[in-house]
Length: 173
Image (cartoon, rainbow, N blue to C red):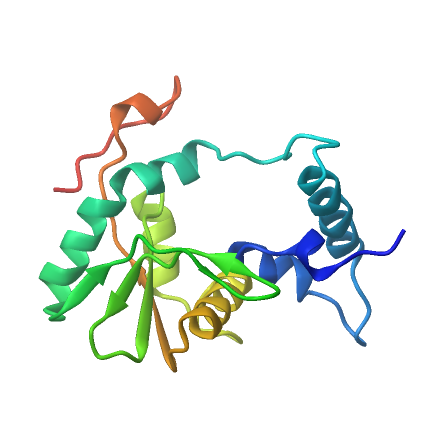
Protein backbone atom coordinates (compact mmCIF):
# COMPACT_ATOMS: atom_id res chain seq x y z
CA UNK A 1 0.00 0.00 0.00
CA UNK A 2 1.39 3.42 -0.99
CA UNK A 3 0.22 6.35 1.12
CA UNK A 4 -0.12 9.86 -0.25
CA UNK A 5 0.16 13.04 1.82
CA UNK A 6 -3.59 13.68 1.37
CA UNK A 7 -4.27 10.31 3.02
CA UNK A 8 -2.57 11.47 6.22
CA UNK A 9 -3.36 15.15 6.64
CA UNK A 10 -3.01 15.83 10.35
CA UNK A 11 -4.88 18.12 12.70
CA UNK A 12 -2.50 20.39 14.64
CA UNK A 13 -3.62 18.73 17.88
CA UNK A 14 -2.27 15.41 16.57
CA UNK A 15 1.29 16.63 16.00
CA UNK A 16 2.35 15.81 19.56
CA UNK A 17 1.52 12.17 18.81
CA UNK A 18 3.41 12.18 15.54
CA UNK A 19 6.48 14.08 16.77
CA UNK A 20 7.08 11.90 19.83
CA UNK A 21 9.78 9.55 18.47
CA UNK A 22 13.48 9.43 19.19
CA UNK A 23 16.22 8.73 16.62
CA UNK A 24 13.82 9.74 13.83
CA UNK A 25 11.79 6.56 14.40
CA UNK A 26 8.01 6.59 14.58
CA UNK A 27 6.64 5.52 17.93
CA UNK A 28 3.98 2.82 18.05
CA UNK A 29 1.48 5.55 18.96
CA UNK A 30 2.43 7.46 15.79
CA UNK A 31 2.15 4.29 13.70
CA UNK A 32 -1.31 3.67 15.15
CA UNK A 33 -2.27 7.27 14.28
CA UNK A 34 -1.12 6.79 10.67
CA UNK A 35 -3.10 3.57 10.34
CA UNK A 36 -6.27 5.01 11.90
CA UNK A 37 -6.06 8.25 9.89
CA UNK A 38 -5.71 6.29 6.67
CA UNK A 39 -8.61 3.97 7.49
CA UNK A 40 -10.89 6.83 8.60
CA UNK A 41 -10.04 8.89 5.49
CA UNK A 42 -11.09 5.92 3.32
CA UNK A 43 -14.32 5.28 5.27
CA UNK A 44 -13.02 1.92 6.50
CA UNK A 45 -13.54 2.80 10.16
CA UNK A 46 -15.03 5.46 12.43
CA UNK A 47 -12.70 7.87 14.28
CA UNK A 48 -11.82 6.53 17.72
CA UNK A 49 -12.06 9.96 19.37
CA UNK A 50 -14.90 12.40 18.85
CA UNK A 51 -14.52 14.39 22.05
CA UNK A 52 -15.08 13.81 25.73
CA UNK A 53 -16.53 15.93 28.52
CA UNK A 54 -13.27 17.90 28.77
CA UNK A 55 -13.04 18.81 25.09
CA UNK A 56 -16.80 19.41 24.86
CA UNK A 57 -16.53 21.87 27.75
CA UNK A 58 -13.74 23.69 25.91
CA UNK A 59 -15.78 23.92 22.73
CA UNK A 60 -18.86 25.10 24.64
CA UNK A 61 -17.13 27.93 26.51
CA UNK A 62 -14.72 29.01 23.77
CA UNK A 63 -16.44 32.28 22.84
CA UNK A 64 -16.73 33.38 26.48
CA UNK A 65 -13.13 32.32 27.12
CA UNK A 66 -11.96 34.46 24.20
CA UNK A 67 -13.94 37.40 25.58
CA UNK A 68 -12.27 36.92 28.99
CA UNK A 69 -8.85 36.58 27.36
CA UNK A 70 -9.34 39.94 25.64
CA UNK A 71 -10.70 41.55 28.81
CA UNK A 72 -7.90 40.40 31.11
CA UNK A 73 -4.93 40.71 28.73
CA UNK A 74 -6.18 43.99 27.29
CA UNK A 75 -4.96 42.81 23.89
CA UNK A 76 -6.49 44.92 21.18
CA UNK A 77 -7.54 44.00 17.69
CA UNK A 78 -8.38 40.36 18.20
CA UNK A 79 -10.08 38.18 15.61
CA UNK A 80 -11.95 35.07 16.70
CA UNK A 81 -10.90 32.87 13.86
CA UNK A 82 -13.50 30.81 12.01
CA UNK A 83 -11.32 30.06 8.97
CA UNK A 84 -9.73 26.67 8.45
CA UNK A 85 -6.14 26.81 7.23
CA UNK A 86 -4.62 23.95 5.24
CA UNK A 87 -1.37 23.08 3.62
CA UNK A 88 -0.20 19.87 2.02
CA UNK A 89 0.35 18.09 5.35
CA UNK A 90 -1.86 19.61 8.06
CA UNK A 91 -5.10 21.48 8.48
CA UNK A 92 -6.80 23.21 11.37
CA UNK A 93 -8.61 26.19 12.81
CA UNK A 94 -6.70 28.27 15.36
CA UNK A 95 -8.89 30.00 17.95
CA UNK A 96 -7.63 33.59 17.72
CA UNK A 97 -5.53 35.69 15.37
CA UNK A 98 -4.13 39.00 16.56
CA UNK A 99 -4.35 41.87 14.12
CA UNK A 100 -0.60 42.42 14.44
CA UNK A 101 -0.35 39.78 11.69
CA UNK A 102 2.30 37.80 13.50
CA UNK A 103 0.56 36.12 16.46
CA UNK A 104 -1.81 33.18 16.76
CA UNK A 105 -3.48 32.31 20.08
CA UNK A 106 -4.92 28.99 21.18
CA UNK A 107 -7.36 29.11 24.08
CA UNK A 108 -7.55 26.25 26.58
CA UNK A 109 -10.25 26.07 29.22
CA UNK A 110 -9.13 23.48 31.79
CA UNK A 111 -11.81 21.39 33.44
CA UNK A 112 -11.13 22.70 36.94
CA UNK A 113 -9.01 25.06 38.99
CA UNK A 114 -6.70 22.11 39.82
CA UNK A 115 -5.58 21.77 36.17
CA UNK A 116 -5.57 25.55 35.79
CA UNK A 117 -3.23 25.99 38.77
CA UNK A 118 -0.97 23.17 37.55
CA UNK A 119 -0.61 24.91 34.20
CA UNK A 120 -0.12 28.34 35.80
CA UNK A 121 2.83 27.15 37.86
CA UNK A 122 4.51 25.10 35.11
CA UNK A 123 8.17 25.43 34.24
CA UNK A 124 9.78 22.77 32.14
CA UNK A 125 11.30 21.65 28.85
CA UNK A 126 8.63 23.07 26.57
CA UNK A 127 7.22 26.59 26.83
CA UNK A 128 3.89 25.04 27.82
CA UNK A 129 3.00 22.16 30.15
CA UNK A 130 1.84 19.82 27.43
CA UNK A 131 4.19 18.91 24.57
CA UNK A 132 1.14 18.28 22.40
CA UNK A 133 0.08 21.90 22.85
CA UNK A 134 3.61 23.02 21.91
CA UNK A 135 3.39 21.13 18.62
CA UNK A 136 -0.17 22.36 18.04
CA UNK A 137 1.05 25.95 18.30
CA UNK A 138 3.94 25.21 15.93
CA UNK A 139 1.38 23.90 13.43
CA UNK A 140 -0.84 26.95 13.76
CA UNK A 141 2.14 29.27 13.16
CA UNK A 142 3.06 27.24 10.08
CA UNK A 143 -0.50 27.30 8.75
CA UNK A 144 -1.07 31.02 9.37
CA UNK A 145 2.44 32.16 8.44
CA UNK A 146 2.86 33.82 11.82
CA UNK A 147 6.00 33.97 13.94
CA UNK A 148 4.54 34.06 17.44
CA UNK A 149 2.09 31.86 19.29
CA UNK A 150 0.45 32.14 22.66
CA UNK A 151 -1.25 29.45 24.68
CA UNK A 152 -3.87 31.06 26.90
CA UNK A 153 -5.41 29.16 29.80
CA UNK A 154 -8.76 30.65 30.76
CA UNK A 155 -10.63 29.30 33.77
CA UNK A 156 -14.33 29.12 32.93
CA UNK A 157 -17.31 27.56 34.67
CA UNK A 158 -18.07 24.09 33.38
CA UNK A 159 -21.62 24.05 32.03
CA UNK A 160 -23.70 21.85 34.32
CA UNK A 161 -24.81 19.69 31.39
CA UNK A 162 -21.26 18.29 31.17
CA UNK A 163 -21.03 17.28 34.81
CA UNK A 164 -21.27 13.58 35.62
CA UNK A 165 -22.60 12.19 38.85
CA UNK A 166 -19.90 12.90 41.42
CA UNK A 167 -18.51 15.95 39.61
CA UNK A 168 -18.73 19.10 41.70
CA UNK A 169 -19.84 22.39 40.16
CA UNK A 170 -17.63 25.27 41.17
CA UNK A 171 -18.55 28.84 40.30
CA UNK A 172 -15.37 30.59 39.14
CA UNK A 173 -17.10 33.88 38.33
